[in-house]
Length: 448
Image (cartoon, rainbow, N blue to C red; front, side, top):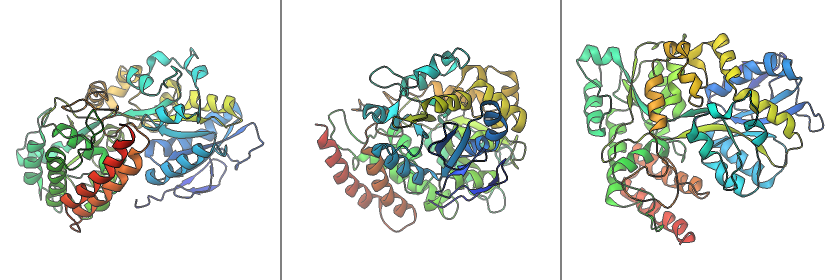
């Protein structure tokens, strides 16, 4: 993953580079294993988390006396570090940003501490959390192991002004064939503009996040209900051929190395007319400093054989079972995922920057609605995502843009490397999926 390096001035005057593997003190302290008022948080470097860093010292630490030491890494890197840390129960980090993919099997392995004390806090108000996330972050034992920082589905973002100028019309619920036609017509609509940006960067959470939703709606699946791999099936192949062809023909240069951050930059800088990705991206596009604020339209995730195809995801907070500071960790989570924190972000940065997608009250807030023209499309996408039935056939595990088994991270990343090569013109889809089929079947055989 191409590194996104951003230097953030912290309250204590220290400087921390977001890519650094060393801990970043969000409240003026370093890592202090013996200090009960100092906790270590390992998290992804998404914009919402960077906002959290800036606000921690002057708010959470000032109110509680608890210092927060952040380690912030790009998505692919943070996944590997969290997996190593939590599987070994090293106890160096008290909290990590985990998703509804990892939390079910992390909790089953005994790597996480339950968060029922947070959920039972009347001020936190667990009932305000969208039910889909509470369900997906609850373990098989019925205990809650994660609280969402923000939630998302996926939808299609497009330049309304460019479409109006070109006489193009975006359906509220487009098909992928319609999107491909619109991408061709939007090419060159402004100097240097390409029709669409799609992730092409290797990684199960990069290119295969959007691509697996395309596979689903094209009628494909990684595994059938009996764990037979179908990675080189006609439907899976058609979806990947379509996706790689679309991004090669109508995507910007360097598409094979474009991830979420690169596509966000392309959309913000007017280099592309459309972008299919996470609904959480909309907050950055509608921020006061965004060059495209007010120019973006939002449509539902494109489909082919299914009624909907948006994914369901949440970056959530989870506590390592080995942490000796679970009380302090719980206080941090109760703050960072609270309605109060959202109101803090709104007052400091604007409502469009609020880490939304998790609380019912946020979508019902008129100030948020005014600042976030995407609110209806985002909520509809989240509430209509179905992790138990995302395609046209029964599945052996839950998940929309992933298969809910531990092995999928390695499997998806392995197959993604061949797909990225195909996007770059250095390999073929057929070869990538033939190798992927062999690897997938070895995984499937473990579950038969």
